[in-house]
Length: 590
Image (cartoon, rainbow, N blue to C red; front, side):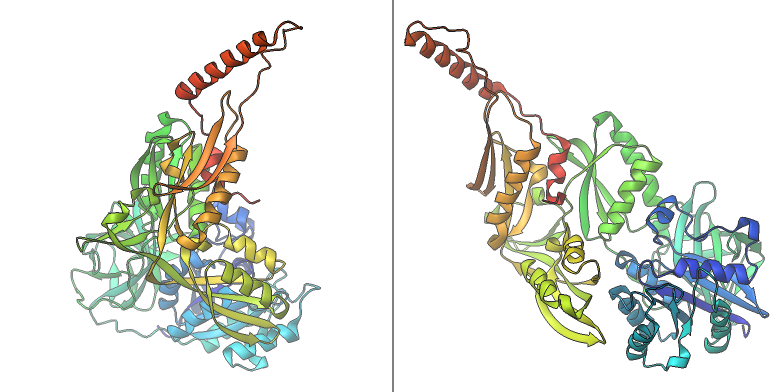
């Protein structure tokens, strides 16, 4: 165990951690030159396109007779639980900060996670070769944050490979070797799991005590699922099988489990021949808190959509779904996500990998209800809200957020927070930047908060949040009527103070997307039985008096009366075709 070092790389999105991992693998000859490509560990097409890491990947490297186990973590807030589990599997972390951008919100969040796990942090300034790099300023920010000295910070360029060997040296010198008892009952931490079409569920695990051998009977302590370790080994970066993985090592286990729900991230694995009873700390069942309805454009594709979602959920245990039926859109599924990026990724994967055409309804969050009978209930969409007379209170989720911005933009950001019913809690400074802490209702940040933040701060603001609690608020359901008929897929929950303006805004946007008919169509917003906003789409007009030339006025009146009668009849039987864009109208920017 003396020669093992387990570490991960943490950074804000796009600060260069995947590129740094590439250089390390090159320098340690882990990957042959001919197989090398940039962002090698980002294997998913989406990751390469968006330039972000979505699934974390471990890799083992050999350097100066030491085994260096690197875990490449995602940088986005939606996956912060996975990041916290990978940090628990390590003894140290390499903190990468972009020398041209400085410390961002995600950097802070990940540093706090690393400090909670008591990890040794190696600060690294990346992109020092850029003309825009401001090394003295950013070094000062890092020193203020970590309380280290300037000599501790390694200045590198991951793209050119400058000084990357110093990072490898520092990992061996500064990060302690893993501690653990090889004679104790076996315990291993799952920090990632995915489903392989040909081999079943594959777990990435860090062995804390004991060892796991090939063909061992394994058991998960949280989900109580049992299985068989069909193959164990190490990743460098492709799988290399071995007879066992022992204390302190990071490796993979191929199991005969059918779904990742049996082996969730953060769970503890033990083996039957030396079973442990005490689970490793920190496991929690991650619950989705953003929900959206996914409907196929044509109803014939419903079964394909259901199969595709089931396949995706095999390898993504955080995904939860249930069938949903809408009078307008037909059959579909309502899916729960960890956040908006997670939702975006799942949507793109369904469209690309399974060739589906989808209509996605406005994302909403879940609400807790207390009924008059004293029962507690949970709803995931506004359409499920029971009658107001049966309710005592409705609770909505609130978040604790942090925004890091340059000083000049503080005013605009605080205004933005207040406009979302948020409350600013604290304001502190890291050199030229301000850290604004606030609380806000999650529902108000779902649709476009991030875009508005980027606009208000000229792209310099970065944002990080975590779920705090559910609070009782004066919430109402706003319904929308098209041509006198209620469309339940458009219903939204809103605070009573914001319901009027929300109703007006949505009705105005609907007017742009619902096509004109030969009869007048009314678009209305209502709370309960009271209408709060209305717009009318005027009818197409046909000039029925065009053929008249002179003659008595009564002939003209007769023709117009006949037309009015026809329109009245048409309004009675006419149907308004609602286009699919209407359901994403809340996401549409002005």
